[in-house]
Image (cartoon, rainbow, N blue to C red):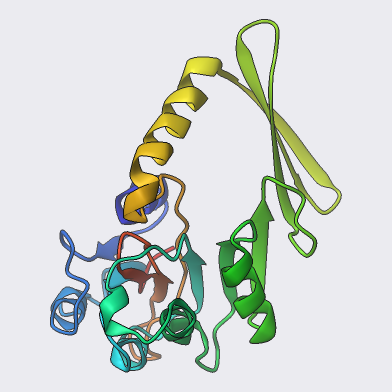
Length: 218
């Protein structure tokens, strides 16, 4: 997700991002050490947790304004009393004052319920018409061997056509990675950097066992 966002936003932003998987209590500060207020306009930082209390500390460092939650996964389950507790800890990254928008998939019932219960400012997307999701995707195979993807956000809609094998490959990869808690369709969060930094930070929980955060990024 981090690399995808960096590639997409590079033409418009000067981006600072975490190297490799620097997402721990040590890795996040080291990643942000590279942030240059006079140069970078966007930051993308990973924030991984393995036990209670870690996300609160990382949230103080990253201070996001926007974020994307991909999937909960099963990594580091041993560090939490329950899946519900782990989910709550991950969402702490987006509970700070000044946080503006969380993007997440409403097709994950537990995540959807937790975000709504906390009344977090959010944009939910769905492929299955889940109530409360503003962004809706519809995929339909055609007789011409392509797949039509329809996207609707409120009253705005768009349609795109893809060769069927492209989407089949995505589904195949997702099926293979699902047991590991990894998804190919991830989303990121944008966060504002500290006032003195003058940049925009982002935070993104990545469900391969960590929460990814982005600061001075999209």
